[in-house]
Length: 469
Length: 122
Image (cartoon, rainbow over all chains, first blue to last red; front, top):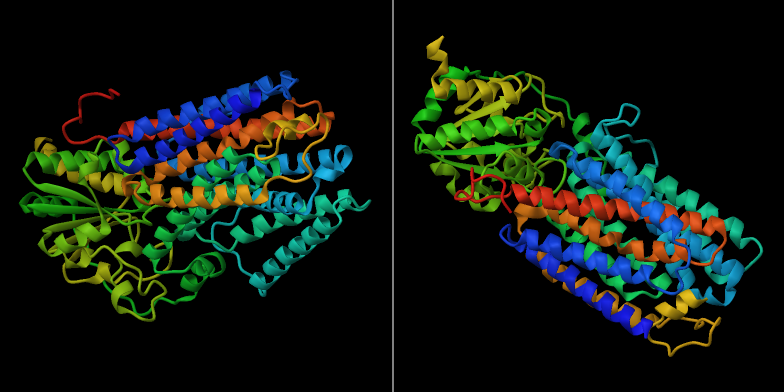
């Protein structure tokens, strides 16, 4: 009887999870999705807790309380820190899967060796390898995003890097095969931790050659791994709810990673093994070209005359926390009857959708956030294109310069606008070290300074405050 | 091994203390493949505006690993097994709580022009 009730509850939870994701297809219904997800999860937790096999409750209560104690503050981080929070939660997901897999193995080894069939062993090995490599890999990614000092920001490369990583993974897989063939051998409990250590090491080594610009893809891939480790746990525990929910997460990570890769015109293997930043850093900057600088006053005058303004935000906007100033600028322009749109490149920022969330936080209606493919047709009619902390995603070299490391990447056609203003912190080349042709174009004027201050100045000019003092 | 007995679906109720030697591997694989296709179909239609909240909500959903963690923590097992379960339970619970809360927090911010300035109502 309890079995039937549990199964029905799990089916209901599965359906609720699918609805949760389905409702994410538009912002209008998305919050319903959260409620469906919470309902599904609550049902799953309560029904599992009520199982007769669960007889000790103290540690469950302690762990749940601790989860709330850590989870609530983690949900209230500033939105600019959302990429590292996301990476951290992938790490937690990986850790949970790895630990449950480990616990089940040792449990069955001592109390029910007949359960360690070849199929379950394969599932356990996959679960712990995926789980623990996601754990350390995501911790590394979170550290890089948080810019923790002792974690190198720039990609770290060394000779035979990919080869040695591959060998490490092959050794782990080889040991896994040995364990699968002899799960109850006397040496098996000693071999098991070796696989864990290899997986932990592999996770670290996988992330150190990856640079900041590739983080959106890497976070998506780690998301898929976290989901797949939950799927593997489902195979180990013979639980279809785990398999379904894990598969939903896995496919989400996969699709996001594909979108990110397409948006950079690169392949998975290239992102994971290409050490992108390194290639760019190696590209020397050629002849000195001249920027044309413009003052906030001059730029404000041009903006006032525009009828269509397109703002292209990038990671620089997040770093400068400029989104609220951008909203003030948006309001000033709107007040004058000027159409203002935001052009969002899929890989702008450090995680998928990063810019949309920051702009939504600043209270900019999402109807004015336009995808790259939709805005590009309008760019020739655009009077002023304002680039706020974006670089590679507006670099025309991606269209024209075959030698450029970003050649072939789809970009926002900022250079087709009648006038381009680009806000840039300094005259040095950007993070990637690639010269951006856009900055030297005839119709481009640079606004040097911190994005927040520069836009603040523009707003002041437009508001006419400068004339008052 | 009452744990497995409770979770095994395909097999008929096993004799107490004796789990089925193997799970219904093909059935589970079947579920996995179908669920992946459903996932692909549903996720593909998610608004690009919402990719960040999508990631945090799938984070919370994949913390369904909490189910396994509860069974390991609460079962009649040696303390070191339960300890591993408790840490896994803590990690999953953190993801559930922070994942759903932050998704909701972000989604509240997405407004259309008409709703703007009307205050953060639900």
